[in-house]
Length: 159
Image (tube, rainbow, N blue to C red; front, side):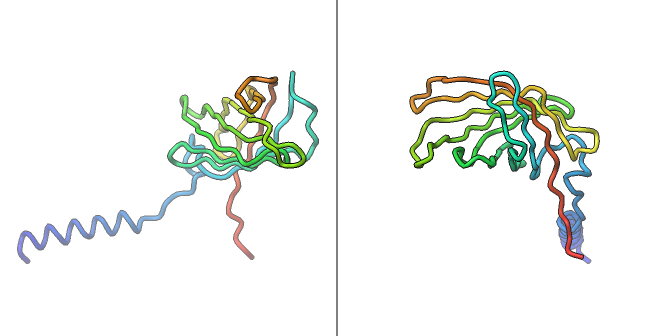
């Protein structure tokens, strides 16, 4: 075999092995927030009483994006960003649109938090969750604090 052909075969074999190598799940990679989560939210000072069913679904993308849906018909899907602070600690900011009962736009809700993953990478907590409500013009109306607990959504194969 010619040297150029041997080199090409080695390169193609390396690429094929890299592409075909099994990838570990997100839960196997400690310190990673990427993935889909179910989040329970509890209010604190300045936050209205939340019903027991109040929760969110959130997806953290590899590129630092965040998409969040809350079980509140007056709040639309949220979009935001996250960044790793250090270790298993992350800073998160989400913006969500607020609407009245007839669907008219009221303003925005900004949620900011510092979340900490547990050692398994399958749960997180946040004791620092700040909610800020703004009117249509961006004027701060009120704010409050709360706590959040997230559980990673895992694949559940059919039996």
